[in-house]
Image 1 (cartoon, rainbow, N blue to C red):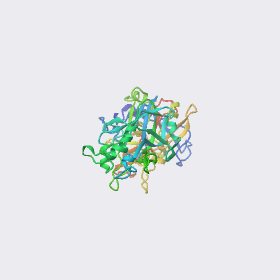
Image 2 (cartoon, rainbow, N blue to C red; image 1 turned 135 degrees about the horizontal axis):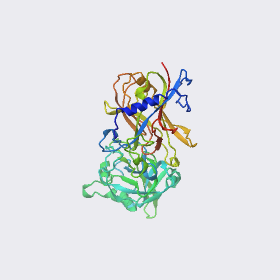
Image 3 (cartoon, one colour; image 1 turned 90 degrees about the vertical axis):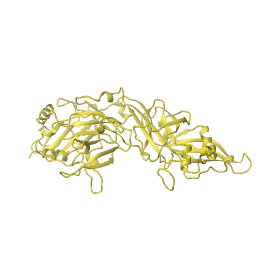
Image 4 (cartoon, rainbow, N blue to C red; image 1 turned 90 degrees about the horizontal axis):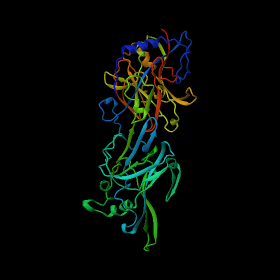
Length: 508
């Protein structure tokens, strides 16, 4: 990330002291404290204060100069795969999502029914198991399907932000224009009556190759394509599918779903007369793993963000705190959060300390909805790594993190204009208690973001414990979810939605 100075400036310390003078005010916002029991605020025994924070926009990158911004997350076939284009998110710009995958016979040697000279091609259809649409489901998407020509490997995890390792060749179908909203409709075709399918009819010439050429050819020293898994891969390395014309949504699919398949329809003789034909279908499917001598299917989901010319790009690189923070799910963005006044707090009993972050409403939020969850962690200069918030995020005896009580899920509230917005309240009470007790010597800069996977250092909630690497999931998918959060311009900021640290405490 573009690292701003980690030490507090003299100006920041002065600002923090000014803020602390306001520490004995009467509570003036609704109490949404996540279920923790705290004593009532009476201005005699229990008090309420709000510390100003500073938040700065930043972007994750790939191949940049700052390793702390590096996003090298790799795609996994078991995760929901996204396809489509967003060309007009007025705040977050453009997104392209492409899918690459293999569909194979379910066993080898494979053969179509009856002899090769007694079968007649009908059609071939690429089918994907539809899950959901993120964005404008009524905006058309035009899809192209082509053949992968590079060495597409099942033993390689491809970086989500990168597709240069995969090359494609001939188109396998005419462009198919679909409306995402229609993918939930029921489908009635031969031996397949169901719903939630994307169906793209592929070129007849490709179907003829699958049915005839692949089943008989041994040219150039190759075996029959259906004799072994490796032989089939030498003939056909997989499908690449992308949206080629402007759209405004991402569609999610399940590669392991029953509806993901290559359907090859044909007729075959079951008697001597030429007209005595039966119609049938064979399916090639995605193979989740390698077993019984069969190799699993390769897959990659490529997600490209383009922020040029949009507000999220304009918000980058400033030296003053940002009034609006732009957070987007992986691969996306984050904010660095500083709390200048925290180091100057004197010792007290902390009943609750919560970092409050609230959504800034716009009508486009109904189309491009916020992430399910946000996450907050801390940058530790001594090890040049990010760490889960000390003392507040902890594994229990079952190996589960207390993510719920920590505050990754938002609650709904009304903003000043009666719009329903999301509000996150991160419980950092124990960390703040250790800071004011002087048992936690460093006030860390924090990072607020909407990750798919968190890869952090974890320090057990014991003073002086040693951190170690940990990894866990936050959001259920990549790609979907973005939100604008109110920043904070300093003590003079009158925005009631501003990001802030609220503390409920008692004096010693």
